[in-house]
Length: 193
Image (tube, rainbow, N blue to C red; front, side):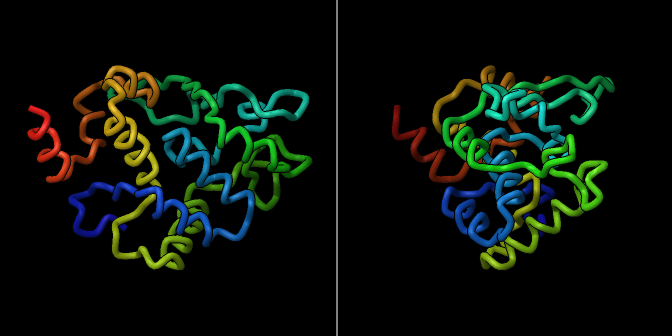
């Protein structure tokens, strides 16, 4: 899905996100997209979320989403780190309205319920929604939500150090590759002089 993007996933606009979300029929999978949009986490970690990573024991959404180290991508030195992300107000409401499957510890259980759904299944859900939304040729992949999250924060003036902490990156050079800079961004920057 990264055609003609030099291996980079497309950055989504708010309108793209809305179009894609409307094409997902299941509330569970809408929530998967929402979590990706509001946390900037990789989908591989999202599908491995347990209910206790997202909800308090009383069933209310937690103040933070906990991405366990073993579910996250390792750094170049092979270490994995737990990442806690504050829950955005909109995401809190979406989590409060959602009723997880009973009988499973997973937020996104497999059909059997004894393990989490696979990344391949999540990828297929996104691909189908992207196609239905008429956005197939844009280069959208599961990594698009992470790039969009990072790019939006950068364009809103959030410091790279803060973005680095929010995303769990250990290297600013790697982080900077996520930020999409357009010709208009460069023109706007020059105009501030």
